[in-house]
Length: 435
Ligand code: UGA
Image (cartoon, rainbow, N blue to C red; front, side, top):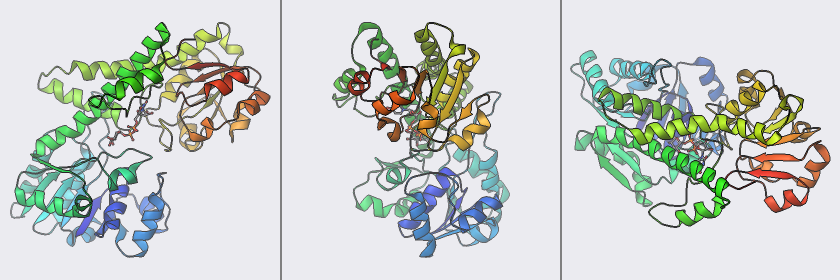
């Protein structure tokens, strides 16, 4: 199938590369000329394990192309995937559909008859209807369909999530439009991937409901971690013990400093905005979001409380800045709030991250950045692990003891082996464990 992908951001690039790898002919377009020029040179603007190899393979076998010209790319497309950003509007959290509308206008201008528009961007329920109306007004004679096909990719695991998803959701208003999109995923369906067909609005709602449910799960386990801390139970055992009940499931029960990223915080705000518009109370979702926001700041207070003295005299090594490991994405990272809270107290902070430092330099003021973990740890009084990078889990506590001045460690991701660190003389604080 000839597919045009509008948007060479995270979702667009991953979808384009994977669809090309499934054997389709894909053109990925973006108005950002320098981004497309970089991609044509083989430079991938985001860090995603495995992505560069698939882009290189599919670009060299002719299945994947990049372009800036929507007219040229859409002239031959049978389907057009909208994969543009829908950031929250700062005033009210509503999803900003500016880029979606621009993409839809390009499709209306340049697409050939029988085009199927596939919405992959996360958009409020009812957006498919709006886009259909917009294209119809611009090109009343055009034969087309608009289908919702939300993505469920996790940064850092996006290729596996695309190629081996738990399900593919296709929300269409006509059987024909839905069948065409289903045929794109036929190679995955043949391997046993479940394709769920729904109405368009239901598919749009599935995306928000999934992210909201996962956020509720995280805020829930984080509160249970606080409870375990207060009553001297072990959150690791409690999470395993409840997770083994298949109705609960073991995934997504790792407590931490609060969730971040480009999706959960933004999608919850947008969902709550849509709920308010129809006077629906979504108190669970509202609470999950509030619990998470409060938690990020509480982490800073927890460290301050444990120091029991003058934080301003402390040198703190903060290791891990991205919102989770295996990404260079700093958006809504809990580390940002933790660092701000500690800086307010006057602490001197040296930070390190294997992938996120470039972005972090623009976001965080008054912090020095270390080129490697050893430089970050040298002469520090306190170590805070804010992101669960594998290389931090592999740190040798005896070597760290030789570098640091103090012995306090706050492992906010529970990745350090407690026995080894305590044996090396560290006062180790973990999430969900009494101290
Ligand atoms: C999330 C969803 O997991 C994807 O299914 C969805 O497609 C995506 O949003 C999206 O809407 O585009 P992502 O934001 O990449 O994916 O990251 P997650 O792996 O879900 O992690 C989100 C946050 O939760 C991170 O800060 C992570 O550290 C935290 N987390 C996750 C935990 O604290 N504990 C866990 O057990 C899992």
